[in-house]
Length: 116
Length: 112
Image (tube, rainbow over all chains, first blue to last red; front, side, top):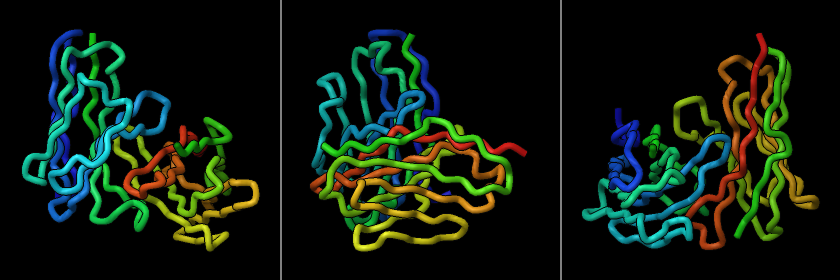
């Protein structure tokens, strides 16, 4: 399977713990996105990388959140000191071109976080 | 920022009927619109897109209509099938053209 893969698919953690999600994009895609989706809502943008550079961050990305893409390939999203409000599906997507040129993002199946 | 919204949270249709899912947007400068489908337990999947120089675009069993005057677009699915059951989102690029803003979604339920 050469699609976007995310790991883990499910994570249950206690409030205050740190969690890390990994995303492996489609190999030739230089653009990578993180979105968060809560139940019954559309995906909300968190951050965007072009190669290894983090070019845009949402106001939703508080200082407890950090994302990296060190070699321009896979990416990690870390949440420190998790709160119950962080419970959501974290979606990763990749693309080869700017969304203004083609709006086709390739999404992974997401990492579902439950904070107890 | 861009604001997109859906008129109905849930749409129930009979198998074989046509479905119409609506979306409103707020930024009159938006010139590119995309529809996504999200099946249960999966990430969103691109369906079809349309640019503002068009008012209609057709794909396989899907048609997107764009009315720039009232800032409204719709996704029409012909001969709806059980496999069409999903949540449908409209999306628009931000001003910088480097990320998408998604609407709230409409859940389409297909009755056999």
